[in-house]
Length: 322
Image 1 (tube, rainbow, N blue to C red):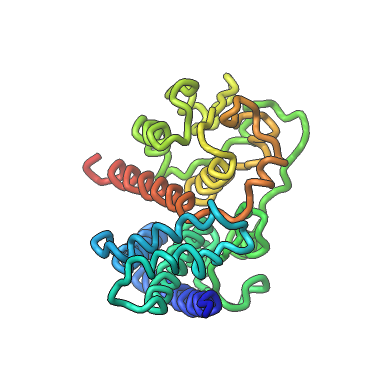
Image 2 (spheres, rainbow, N blue to C red):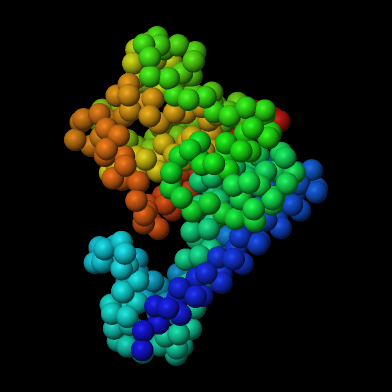
């Protein structure tokens, strides 16, 4: 008997649970007058711990089943990923013959996946929830009647709820991207890096991290060029040469924009041909659109680890004794 419907039902149930946990925690941290950075780090840490404990590395049988499940993107198309539960994962379960039911594993997997993805979606759209905290209201918006965690992969600036909150909190909305002959290194196009993260993002440690994790090409990128890019200093037209796939580039730039900058415009970067793909060619809008599909868990997890790394660097650099 297929358990795909059961997985989907449990996933939905646990997603509602995760969204409720996030909302309650944001409200509680707001009540305690804690800043949003502290609150969001606390939420992400909570879900990371939960995910790790649901299927710990020491549980070899469940880990083996999870390993098979993570290969679904290699085997099935995006519309039928969970067919792997009725086939390869179930065959592996019968091979292992563990002391727990297959239905129990499906329940644990559904909770793990829903917690993992809801946490990542919260992390990728933190600017929305930061403004909700600033506005001190979590429900009743025209574009989000009931509090929810955004699931879209699209740029946060294009989301109606982001623009609504921007108007309510700051009295304005993002300006339309100008397609004129603005001077290449004009202040108008500065990324407006958040002061708290400025030193961390342009540090050698972050540059080395992106090299070591195969985001940036070690042979084509120089540290000084990277610093100029992060600073928005375009007098020398700095470019970033990537080693990863276009989808990962999109996720990385999106995470930078959502977490560390107030005005990092992806389409402007494409227009100026500042982002170079692994084939040595400037990325075009079409290739970004095709990359902006459902992201694999492992890819999103890599981005989350990067965000966590930058946060730790920033926290260390902003300690009172630094």
